[in-house]
Amino acid sequence: MNYRHGFHAGNFADVLKHAVLARILQHLDAKPTPYRVIDTHAGVGRYDLDSEEALRTHEWKDGVARLDRSPLSAAAEAVLEPYRAALAAIRSEYGPSAYPGSPWLCRHAMRPFDRLIAAELHPPTYRKLAEVLARDGRCKALAIDGWTALRANIPPKERRGVVLIDPPFEEKDEFATLTEQFIAAHRKWPTGIYMLWYPIKDRTAVETMADGVREAGIGRLLRLEIDVDRPEAAGGLGATGLLIANPPWKLAEEAETLLPALTERLAQGQKPRYLCEQIRPDG
Ligand SMILES: C[S@@+](CC[C@H](N)C(=O)[O-])C[C@H]1O[C@@H](n2cnc3c(N)ncnc32)[C@H](O)[C@@H]1O
Image (cartoon, rainbow, N blue to C red; front, side, top):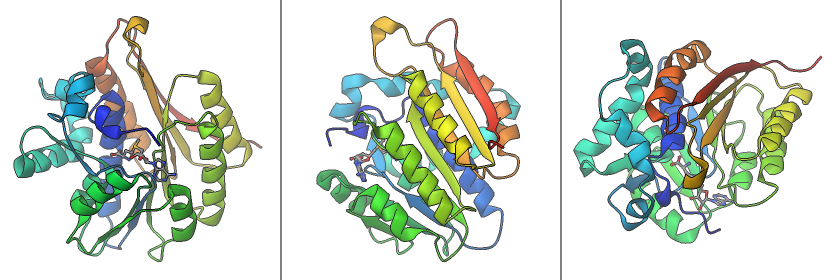
């Protein structure tokens, strides 16, 4: 467990993941019944873009900092609104270099009767997460393996909610684990919303995952990807994706509005690309 999200907080991949997560939460908020969020790989919850880790990579400069330059189109801004609102809220509370991790975004969106379970296995990261979520009776931080937390907490008693699966991708077989764990969780709770984050370095691994979930008969899947065309010499991550099961009504349409504008804003080369695709089950 060497991965520390502090090096990557607020980068282009976080912007996509957190903008879409904030949108999903807003859809959940639109109905009066309670929901639960299960964040299987939670991180520290709140980041400081002025920290030594963040300043070592400066990844946020080609991520969230680009959104600060100027608004996107009015239509894209309408989709981005809950993410912008969360950024404004955390900055007003903790200063301009604060950045919300997924647990903080969830906490910000949740109503008094909604609940969050956030699992984080790395002990120092867990301790910071527990501090960030302390004194909020709606939230529970667990120092356990995210896959165990997932199996133990679905279906939640609310029967409504979202599972964020955002592993560190340190292991060679992480795509296979993600696919297996997601298929098993979906069997146990087929109506939950699931959002899986993945890096795109090995396109074969991504296609194998998409084929695996399709073959498992999982319907109602939305696949969103952006490739910022990062110059090879710069190294690091240049493309990322989200696989969303049971996306809220309208999310696909909203993504079609947001992704072109976001991809253009986050581009690092001349040929950035995006993908919004609805995956149908086989057969
Ligand atoms: C990509 S980061 C999470 C970022 C966070 N979801 C966000 O969006 O702000 C992945 C996290 O998973 C943690 N981790 C690694 N293995 C884990 C496991 N088996 N169970 C739970 N957490 C784990 C790492 O310590 C790291 O903090």
